[in-house]
Image (cartoon, rainbow, N blue to C red; front, side, top):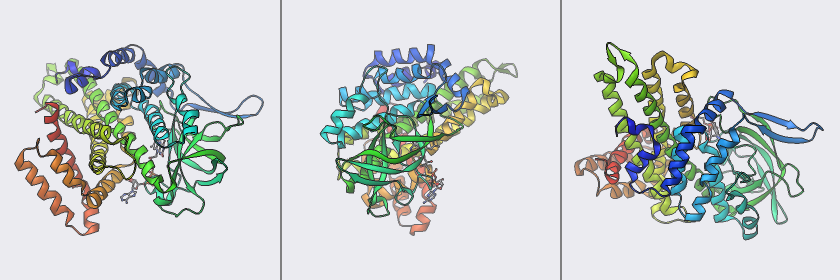
Length: 485
Ligand SMILES: Cc1cc2nc3c(=O)[nH]c(=O)nc-3n(C[C@H](O)[C@H](O)[C@H](O)COP(=O)(O)OP(=O)(O)OC[C@H]3O[C@@H](n4cnc5c(N)ncnc54)[C@H](O)[C@@H]3O)c2cc1C
């Protein structure tokens, strides 16, 4: 990929994937971002946390979120382009992930509302009763500015990693629906018209098996607020999505799927977002490289542009190669999810392979994004640290990509679990066999097998080194699939 090619996410996708579904739509979406979206996004980031207006002038609780001018224009572009409705029209997730890549090149935070809305629609369509689906799904699939948004709220104040213990939100049956009482501590896209919420039905065990997934509308059937927003969080990045603390007080809710399947449904929701997180991380990496490259062409030191000095040139080439590897890994996660996303528990044999690739991709692409964003600041030098030049924003955004949808630790430990319990490493190594260098494959196989013989606590302690090697081996090998050798 040459330097010019770095500046267009759609050109990169086209070069890597060949035929693009809805290419004219993607081109128009990118052109809109380059022309109009970019300055709005910069303004939203600079404005910081959106404002919460809790009461109207007569003292009625309204919990309205007030955004900087232009935010709604920005937000609705992606919905109109089809980040949710196209998935249902084409029966494929691919158009949504392609739009997500373009979105994240400009604003990785804004990809969050799209992903959580898509996850809400997918879970509702798969697991809602016919009457709940008929009532709510069309609202999420509208193509104009009246479209409803979704959200996925699992994390509570006692922690997001150990949901089985930390979720205290209670669910009580109430006729044809449920009533939820409790709170969520990290609730992105606060204000969404529909939210997926993890809660524990009364009497259910205090572990992950005791969790169920519920759909919670913003308004009760009588028109009153169904959940309240306690406050909005002041975050270092992703300011184009309001993240709040929300409270449920006997909130009306509809259970999705069977209670015993709750944790599987919650994992499906998270996995769809983790794949999106990987796509967002790779797109952000491209953006950093594009900005760094365009600066390095013009900034002079020691008589020539800094990008022409051998050291910086080599660093750029290595980072570009790593970004292309990261794309191959993230795209494989999309391709595997495309094969399994319609499945329901107990799933097919491909599911553990998908899970392992998704954990590898979520972990490794976020690491690459953070490291590349830090390097981008170095390339800009002192002005890299100044808010007025934009490079520092990519580091703030990248740091959040590593945390939400499950921290690196979570990806590593869940990846280890799917290897040990489902043999997913064997499926992965067999999957890579036709593409891999046979000696490298043999070395990697021996490394994984030796690692899995370690005593349990040593296995946990050493999992990061193994995961890093496995992720970069998988990514390098998959480049061949995209014609990138
Ligand atoms: C901007 C933002 C938006 C978010 N939006 C949402 C949202 O919309 N919905 C939602 O549900 N959540 C959301 N989250 C929450 C996010 O998913 C959690 O922050 C994340 O899952 C980690 O949970 P925690 O922050 O409670 O950390 P904890 O679970 O308390 O963990 C603290 C640290 O301990 C580590 N740790 C935990 N267990 C182990 C272990 N066994 N071994 C080693 N280390 C371990 C963790 O990895 C982490 O580093 C959001 C977070 C952020 C930052």
